[in-house]
Image (cartoon, rainbow, N blue to C red; front, side, top):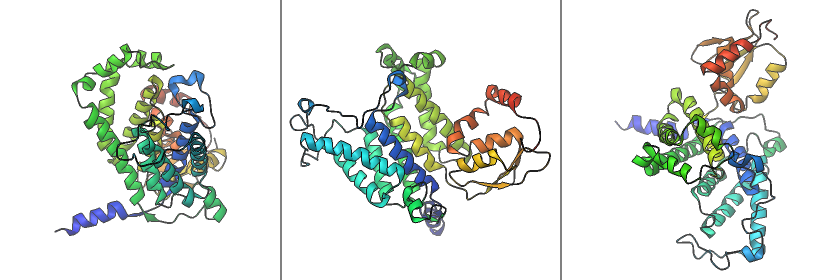
Length: 378
């Protein structure tokens, strides 16, 4: 009687899958951490973006608080605070390690080292303690105990095994998926499932308090009033708790999540949280091992598709003479022309959002007008 639940548990956590999505999470997590440590983020201040290598929270010795008013995280008072020079070294080391994580160089040593230093940074003082930083730390510890260097890394290129795709247990990917679910569960059911958010009054109050003061806030609020935006935030975050686990709903939930976080990032300063969630969505896109067959003529478009197929989802085939593009899905469905284009675009990370937009009437109509008419080599 217990055989079926045990089998489902084993399959869920220990199924053998390729690691492209996990390695992409490593790459983009490193990139987002670099962006955070250099202060080069925020659509809310896009008109005055600047870079600092690294960005100093305490730029001068007289501003340094950790040797006095430290505010240690409760339970971690025993951690020694660095001197000001030690603090500068720590920030430099974090940026250097984050860059190496992004590049995938010496990954088996660098990722645990970054996880350890960032944990120290997080627990050292409440000046650094945020749920955004906690998410970084948890993701890095998952990556530290996984083979996240097998793809998209200088380590793989250096070893000469960049094209090798060994099947490994899916456990670290599942851990990241569960982390994303926990984040949205806490955000929705733990923080926003109340009258203030459901009626949108919280967002309206933030607007009146001039918290929604981003450079692009006026354009966003002209389309979505603050009250409606507050209600939609609750709806989308609640849907993400469940919808990311449903294959038929996953694409649209990720699309809604991207729009939600991009909109919030345009309105106000939320740090790099939006970009962190964009990176973690990749954990829900598990590779399919070339099971989607794309009939496309050899040429520049075929080469571009190969370059964008980071997850190894496509197998290219010769097209029929009367078709420019045809896609055969693993369930046997065959899509042609514009429908095939939409499917291809939504299956690659860089073109996911444009692909989803092609399902909306206004963008679809424009695409129909622009869709080339000619031979299969077009």
